[in-house]
Amino acid sequence: MKILVIEDEPGLLKSIEDSLKKEHYVVETASDYLSAVEKVFVYDYDCILLDIMLPNGSGLQILEQLNEKGKTENVIIISAKDSLDDKIKGLELGADDYLTKPFHLAELTARVKAVLRRNTLEGKSTIDYGNVSLDPDNRKVTINKEPITLNRKEFDVLKYFLINKNRLITRTGLAEHVWGDHIDQADNFDFIYYQITNLRKKLDEAGASVEIKAVYGVGYKLEKS
Amino acid sequence: MKILVIEDEPGLLKSIEDSLKKEHYVVETASDYLSAVEKVFVYDYDCILLDIMLPNGSGLQILEQLNEKGKTENVIIISAKDSLDDKIKGLELGADDYLTKPFHLAELTARVKAVLRRNTLEGKSTIDYGNVSLDPDNRKVTINKEPITLNRKEFDVLKYFLINKNRLITRTGLAEHVWGDHIDQADNFDFIYYQITNLRKKLDEAGASVEIKAVYGVGYKLEKS
DNA sequence: TTGAAACTTTCTGGAATCTTAAAGGATAAT
DNA sequence: ATTATCCTTTAAGATTCCAGAAAGTTTCAA
Image (cartoon, rainbow over all chains, first blue to last red; front, side, top):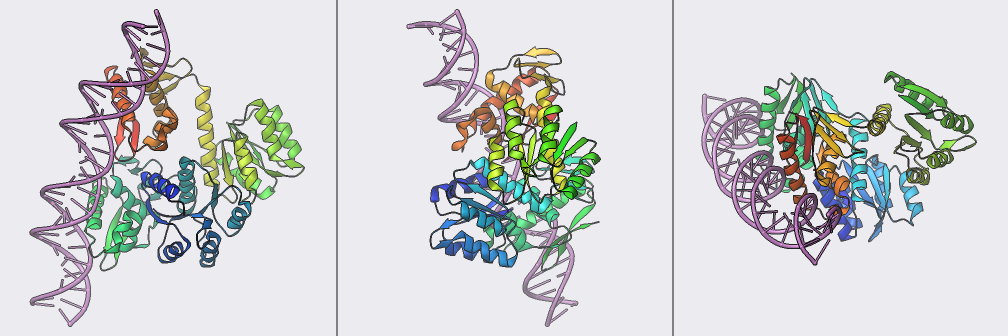
């Protein structure tokens, strides 16, 4: 799960980043209008935290542009208490939620979690496929109702697969969403291979009815076997 | 479990009612301010779903009155996206949760379930799990009916675990709920480790059938062993 | 068929995380 | 004020995890 935090005040930015990372999200940041725009339109984020008041431009402009692309349902607005109009405008532009400064970091992560759940889980508490069931909140995976233990990366990878079940998973997509900043060089996907290997082993041993198939030259696909 | 749904739009009201009934709840409804007030003050509900925008009055007024009675912890607010201030006010008035329209019905029932669990737990005099029984009021813990003595923090930690049994306990969550304001920096959870160690030792020595399992990089889980 | 690229598997060292023990402060009771 | 109890901090050791490397296998294209 990759999250972009757009916020110009360094201290706050750092706190937000840290607390999100503690929740195992992949976090990227932008602290001014231009770099924010750049990132937003180049990369794909699962959730965007957007401060309205930015140097060189308003976050609302970013939102407007996102709106044209039809990708605003994962935006959470961060705004100062007195800019009520901005807040309302933001929600009219399709933002999913808002937070008023100052806020508790716990509240922030809760909102992020809620947005991600709404958009990926549609209200359910688990993602199911075949006899595999994954509970994001409890970081628990069961196969035929029997719990199996996965470590962090294995869990994140499987989750990404399940969210994108039946879809083709590119290695760059996987790297971006599960690893984050690894991608810049990305001439070598050994770190992915390693996790895939282990995940396959565990799924197989537990008798999963799904398998991770390699698509040569492209990536992977999760299929019922 | 009896639930009251206060909502003026007939279609939505019917859908909510149906999906709750499917979960075997007893459901009653009200579609305007007056009949809502009437029901709320005559009967006792385990959970109330409250739409803020109502004909003839605001749901907030209902909430205010409930607040005087000290019974708002089982209220879930349903609000339209643009009535932001209402939402905030609602939570300030002690509502337990809120949902923004439009929402998935699965999410609604999940929230209801959560509220009910929170509140029914308070109702009982002990929280039990395996052969462990904790009495919050008297701050007493027994294992196989045999009392064991815990210190303050040990007790609080165990209670937090028991309230959230089967759920994943994050260290930040634990810090927040048991320690309070410690969390602000919280790059170091040694104070938690210490309590966990002692608690484990005492549970083990007393022959508890449950154990605190570490989840690497995330937190803990209380499981039957 | 053959070589190159893509993919799989196994191993390993170091980093991050967790556990435990012990020492020093804080707090509450007497 | 003194003592006993409890809590936090410190520090050292154990465990778990993961990127990277290396070696082996499969797939593709010429």
